Amino acid sequence: MIKFIDLLTEKLADAFEACGFERRFGKVTISNRPDLCEFQCNGAMAAAKQYKTAPINIANQVVEKLQASDTFAEIQAVMPGFINLKISEKVLVDYATEMAADERMGYEQATERQSIVVDYGGANVAKPLHVGHLRSAIIGESIKRICKFAGHEVIGDVHLGDWGLQMGLIITELKHRQPELIYFDDSFEGEYPTEAPFTISELEEIYPCANAKSKMDEVYKEEAREATAQLQYGKRGYMALWNHIMNVSVADLKKNYDNMDVHFEMWGKESDAQAYIPDMIEELKAGGYTEISDGALVIDVKEEGDTKEIPPCMLLKSDGATLYDTTDLATLVERKQKFNPAHVIYVVDKRQELHFVQVFRAARKTGIMTDNTKLTFQGFGTMNGKDGKPYKTRDGGVMRLENLISSINDAVYEKMMENRTIEDKEAKETAKIVGLAALKYGDLSNQAAKDYIFDVERFTSFEGNTGPYILYTIVRIKSILGKYKEQAGKNSADCMFAGTMNATEKALFMELVKFNEVMENAYDELAPHKICAYIFDISNAFNRFYHETKILAEENIAKKESYIALLILTKRVLESCINLLGFSSPDRM
Image (cartoon, rainbow, N blue to C red; front, side, top):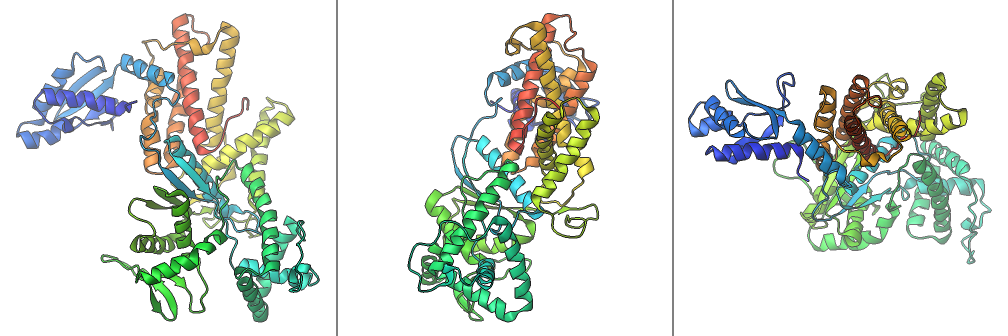
């Protein structure tokens, strides 16, 4: 379905062409003076230079051609050559009727279905999720849903960190604590136990303890390095412990991600890349892409025009150890073999941009990824406290994500119980739904690359640009539709739009018809914040309409049914949008 603004542009382009001017001058934009008009066309100004005539003469000719059009309620040429447009009620009704009849409300899926990999999550195993994992999960999930809605096959990959020194540290600490475990008996040849020798709580205590020891004891750290190397060489006992660590950690991570309504099609791991590294390095050597620098094997990724130093992409350290550069390149090899993606999107802290510049350049230079695959670094800013520094607990520690979510839910519950409109048990369940919306909307309404202040009081407010305000709008619509069904005794889906509108009703129509344009922009720019801005505008437009219109008390049946049809479409648009943002609405608040 054509975008509404493109429909208007076609009308203006036809008129320009009919007057003997090029169609390209008919571009329509939203008015920057809404007090004067709803849309405008400034093409006569540019056309005047080419056709060497006064812009107002061109504008007047175009306006004259459009006077009979039923698309515009009002159209006028204004000095020095602007064309001001007000939309007819008929064209809005026709467009909204077509939207309402379409399952996707006019947003067309891509003609070519692509395979897209979204790399988000990035949690390290054996550690609890903390606030630092929040943005990757929330933004990545929304981008994945937006790409799916656009019609593509999208693989969300959690890409767990499971293969570095942290594993050696955990194994070393376990060995110190329980040296009698059979995993440390090199002579053992039987089957290892299926039950892990630790719980998730114990595992989460072991790692920070081992990490602290390694910083104070060089012998201990060297032992951990050796354990890491033996694990990577495939030592049986250590591999068995690694499997236990993975199973216990992943079960806990899935529970926490599920609580955020964040889901992955692929639970990939850094270690998955290990199988691809040896062949990849040999091929890169054979292709003449590598060189030795201070004993390390590197790929020079400098390019002409660089304004700052771009260090080489390092494949092997001087001692033969691999690095993140190595595993990320090998992961691209893996993804190409498994999915042959048209696009790989990394939702990662923006402070890692240089690393991905190196990896992307190395992948392009070596042919690991050709120009047929788009590589995108979607860097995000930090979530800060009111002091402007990364968000911490009151005692200065890094807050666990489940504790952050709990604090949001508690704040929402307290606000809901002030009104006491629903029972306590229902309120607690509803608070979880609203709390998740508060958290996700509070994050996603900011442009991803920017830092933002995390403010529980503001995020959980039922007024202003917040998740609870959006949900309250949807709940209000649900309530009206429910009352209408009781009052009318018939299916509200049978209601049709009428042709006459009051000012706030028309304003709501004007917001709704932007749907496919907003969805297209959100996909093209991987920008969930554009959807947030859109539904905030819709919610404001609806609430103005609601407060100025007696919807259920309207005596004219056709008019009342038109109001109900408008509410149904508003609800559908809002619910589609919040689903793309990763949350849902309750029935009552």
